[in-house]
Length: 256
Image 1 (cartoon, rainbow, N blue to C red):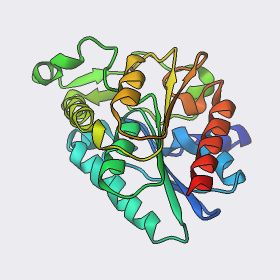
Image 2: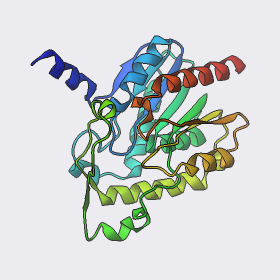
Image 3: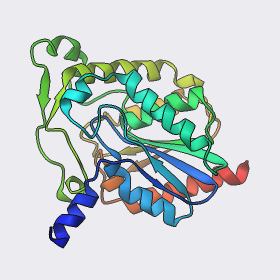
Image 4: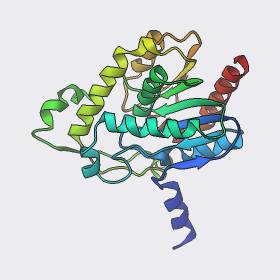
């Protein structure tokens, strides 16, 4: 195997990763049909900043569309909760949850149910741009899978382990979870940084404003990234994103 192929394999590994660091831990939660690979550059950068970093793999992800089809949001939630429990018994004092897309919803759900120092949501959906999404419960009986339409930009695609088709049954479960989280946003009280890409091709950017308005956190902020798309941890403004997350976490910890 050549050097470039080895690098590509590392970049696209769907495996979970844990980077040991300081007493502040960051739990990175990938998105729907994603894997921890979309967080690897962020994870390494956060470790360099002194954080302990853990990115688990959610049930049904990083394997096959058929396995994903057999899971629901409850399974994805249980994967996250078990990972959170494991992290609480490591040598850390504070845990921050950072979630991309559906991972952001899972982070908010975790915050309303279990102790966290803070939350960062990255392009978390309250509404999706695809106008067919509300009809998915009906469409899944006619068309079980949705074929992946096109690849992302090369600097993003090289890190991804995507499914070439997505079960509509799983999308229906995601929609159910989106509604659950939306209806309980007021129960989120921890410091929260809401991040939204202006060029998000998947999530309606108004979702970010809705989250900010409806959570009950006294410390909350919304940061826009005008040159980024949906997979913001891999996009061109990622270094700014990493720095903004670092600033947010350090400020919250200093206030405790």
